[in-house]
Image (spheres, rainbow, N blue to C red):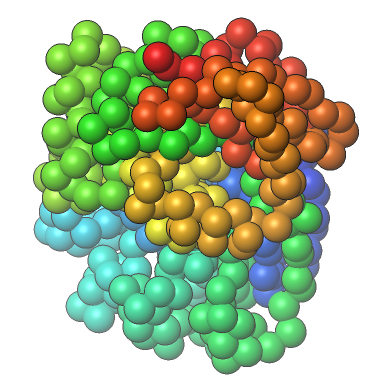
Length: 405
């Protein structure tokens, strides 16, 4: 019943592939795009396999960030609202004493970050001898040097017959090494025929650093924004940019890893509930955060890796909705842009040629092409089209990004 109340009418491809296999007890290595329903793909079989009469932790879900832990636990509670399953969330930055008290009460499903769960386990408070299922969401991040030692220590506390489910959009070499060690014969699901979401249209603008705020102001006035997430590469720039956006007269929150956990939770909760239209953040917010009202992502600072780009852009266009990604690229970013474009192999070539004082950009899409004539003024900045893969149903008047004189 909780599934229907959550609004699910039919399973997404990742849910259709993974849920039946997970219920058989097999290990799973699943690669799927952001925003395709991965969370429900592992929460549903986890809830289904729990024995409600057994007072023990039977499922552990590991995630890399506190915000994702809160979101995942909420999904579990909503899907299992008519079941007598006790869900607990625990992360660093919260009261250890409160977690200890909570664990003396019944807990069937535990969601949290690796460090905190390992700490509770080492203290003998979190007992995992009956935990038959370990789920790793955003597995590539969990297997980074920051988390992998804790994850591997935690696995030693699980029974030998445990089942491991790994989900992520990207799987670097570290995942293969981990798989060979802990998942000898997993069921492999790969739904990554395309690296970005179908509903996301991507643009870039060549700008000077001093022009970025003016460019952002123009975007706010031209785009039809439900909610937007604006990414910066440092904590200091997040706070400064949020202040400038507020001074321009737009509602804006900010969030980063150096904020107190209670403050972060409040910002995340309020933004998710629509209290503010724009959120400025660091890459803290790139992992698995699912806010369906977000239809625009702006890379105020261009990311350094294709993996980060993919996760940032994936904050819009969630679960089949249309989205827009805009990248502000400086002269120093030009090589990074080429590197990322080469790594995301689905991007189509963009053909350009001069015509008087204009430059025509022909976008070669997978389905059809279209031509735009843009005024070309050296020394000013214009929008070009960043390797647009396809035309979308978004009306063109929402994409008035071409020229700022």
